[in-house]
Length: 209
Image (tube, rainbow, N blue to C red):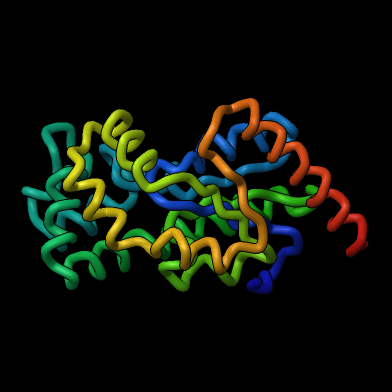
């Protein structure tokens, strides 16, 4: 469990590709919980006229952008898989900006009993763990991840497996979790788990006041 460097009761929500992190985040949001999704900021930063576009263009050239001026996600995904230095360079551009916006958002809801911070690579990178007090992993079967990612993002099986290979294994992720949500069945089961955790996190907040 990491200790937040400036706020209490920040739950770091993570999980492998297509595990259901965004869906779980929406369910917590329905309960009035402030939810910060770092993926949203990453997409905004790399959209046309996004704050990260000039630095991406400077670092990777015009081939890194699509016809609309956004980062060409498929092309850059292939590049960083084949070039660890390029991966590090892109992270060096994006992570500080995402971290800055996440801090601003979290601080804006500092009075909430607790908040959810969604970070897909929470355990794989060192940037965001200091922000959270507790970790919540959304878990599902690897084959479910593959089929959901292929359906959602039009990625082929080989690419999804490559992405999964760069993330922590399921066992490693579960071993580092303070709490776990099982997303192997349906949304009704998911909602029941979110509701139980909501009560738990509220009680944890009460205990610290």
